[in-house]
Length: 175
Image (cartoon, rainbow, N blue to C red; front, side):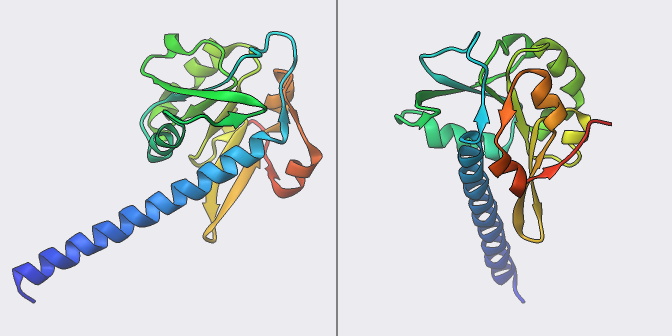
């Protein structure tokens, strides 16, 4: 095989990988939006004007979510969605949902400490996240999206997860 053929093959493989990753993120984002419907936040302290999603750390899924919501009027929990990224833990106030990218896994204990007992749904897509105190983890198993839920952690902050979602999820405990 000559160098040009190898170059073309390399580009095609990268395109297929990029397209596959884009499709995975698209499906994860759909699952993300749907499971939010089955979570209830406490009324007290909840901002009634919008549903805020904060992304902490760099990830393809976080970028896809930003692209999917930025500049568009979308609703979650009957509220317009506001989505933004933060670079420092101190910038995380009290959003409805905090997506923690795998690039920020080393900062998990500091993130949890900054949230204290605020009713913030923590979501990610990295291995063993629920065992470390994340509330929802989206993983891939046998080419399917798997939802893992740490019910203990969500109850601690007053979030309620509907039984319909629990039927489809794998329940995980903090270790």
